[in-house]
Amino acid sequence: MKRNGKLLPLFLSLCLLLPLALPAAMAVDSAIQLETIRALGIMTGDENGEMNLSSPVTRAQFVKMMTAASVYRDSIGDGSGSALFQDVKSDHWASGYIKLAVEQEWMTGYVDGTFRPDSTITLEEGCTALLRLLGYSSDSLSGSYPTAQLTKARAVGLLDDLSVSQGEDLTRQDCVTLFYNLLTAENSDGQVYGTTLGYTVPNGEVDYSALVTADTEGPYVAGSGGLSLPFSDDNVTVYYNGSLSSLSAAAEYDVYYYNENLRTVWIYHDRVTGTLTAVSPSRAAPTSVTVAGNEYELGTSGATYKVSSQGSFSAGDTVTLLLGMNGEVVDVISPVSSSDTTQYYGVVVSSQKGASSADTGSSSSTSEQTVTQVACSDGVVRTFYHSGSAHAAGRLVLVTSQDGSTTVKTLSSKSLSGRVSSDGSRFAGYSFAEDVEILDTDSEGGYLRVYPSRLAGSTLDSADVLYYTLDENGEIDRLILRDVTGDLVTYVYLTGITSHSGSMSSSASYTYLLDGESRTVSSSAVYSVESGGAAILYDDGEVRRIRQLSSVRLTGLSELSAEAGNETYALAEEVQVYLKSGLLSTSYYLTTLSEINAEDYVLTGWYDDLDYAAGGRIRIIIAETG
Figure 1 (cartoon, rainbow, N blue to C red):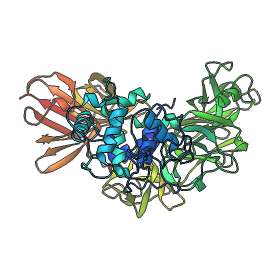
Figure 2: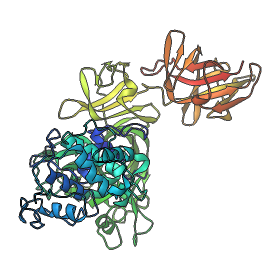
Figure 3: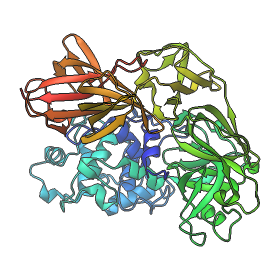
Figure 4: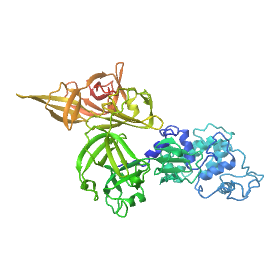
């Protein structure tokens, strides 16, 4: 399995603090505006990282912000100017910024030879300066100051979402909005200003994820002494595997990234230990490796070198992969070098004893091994090479990799019972950890990764819960279930049933629709079902059972649920919707929820009532034209 998604993990962790961007027609969230302006270095926090958004802004502070929002952002620093004004000496911290602002005619001094750097700046003064930055001269404005400037500022969008009025001083919060609007405004040449600085500005919004990624450094691998950061760790925001945390959580061999402008660090403890079975496309120039039966992209030159023909690892070796934010391989180390034991909880998908050294690529071992595929609690199927017996499909196991050796051990059930809270945050007296791994399984090795919201409001008994673990906070971080959701069953719409009777036995053929395709399956048993919705249970590819679903006339329909009188039914995520052209028709056409409604069609919903704790969902909808 390749793990991709260039920006998604980073952007999702950022969104823990920031609401998602709204559609272009709506206002951009103020938190996103703030983080964009901070990421660009236009406005930074004080020595404690505080943004002090209610504080007024001085003229000197404003020209520094303008410089950071211009093509000169990397060429001017504190105290790099000259004594142009009697109140701004060459050693004044803002002298360089003020010199630039005057030279570019963004701002001017007063007739008395002063610049008044510590005076607060008003709305009209700020807008006048930014209009000049955009290339609008006084000749392009109609009217007198300040009405002409404010009118033009409003026309180009500088005043969008600003509540400050003429004559009022700008606060740092006002400047966040004002400079964000500057980046999305058009300059005098008709170009979106932010794009002239090299930023991406689609649909009137600055692409925040691209900005963060551009200024984010990494990946790095933590040493025994922790992380090495080029800035103070005071008031640093830390994400550990996507959750808010602290620098003290970092362990040796963790992968980390940092953004100095945002004073943010992302740490990832994501490791895969197993047998290295393939290096692709060649050891001379590898781009990916296969470990524990899954393929991973190589993300750094160091990792690439270690598995190349010049490196220290080859097929058959047991290795630990250190993975980065996108699931790419940042480094490859020997398991003995890892500071902790790697463990996986899950259920067996398949297991076979008798894999020879040729199967694993090992040249150092001639003993037969057992190859076991395990659906782990994170929803990933991993392949393990180990000694010992094979395990039955559906068996609950613990896989341990330590010091280059892998063991697969059968686990006894560790159960809980109780109700999952209506918001999906708690179960049986325990809270769910933010990164909880929940796996629904069946006795045949079927599996499905689910999330707390899928179980919300359900009551689980001891037979439903195979195993659970708690983290250091006493929260459930793993939960392995058995046939709880009903989502592992194949749901079909039966269109024809043919019975075959012989002298000694009976059998039947069942024709059905599945995802719009007509199929037929034969069974040595005759099941008590009729045309309509049904659930087919398989065992090693053979039909083990066919059960009828229950039907209900639907009176209302939305994207997530359906109404039948006073009853509300949740829709399965994979709900199948068929259009039947008439009451007497035998033709069904696969369609979508958006194409049907309860006003123009007669709707029949087929739902499972097969004793699944979190079941009862509508699996199939038939829409008839009447």
